[in-house]
Length: 126
Image (cartoon, rainbow, N blue to C red; front, side, top):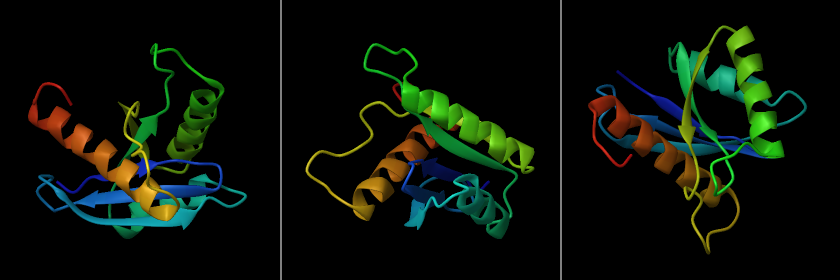
């Protein structure tokens, strides 16, 4: 089953899509978040024929909620209200150091997707 993951942001979202069997990342891209940040996520999920997306949850390094995680949870609620389910992945340490701009968001989304795929296969450490 195809899986779509998103590294959300207030300016831009990074996306990563798996193959049809849900084994590995086949495509990454970014989209501007805009005034309705749920819109590009809903559009991407619907374009790919998916009823669910994986969102990275930005917890603090100690594992607690932050202002950003509260914003992302509210975004997740808006996505669910738009008819697409949401799964959560802890996104700590998914953003690469030394990478800037859209590629940074794509890389983070690909890492979130890899974690989600490992969890679905029952692989530990993901």
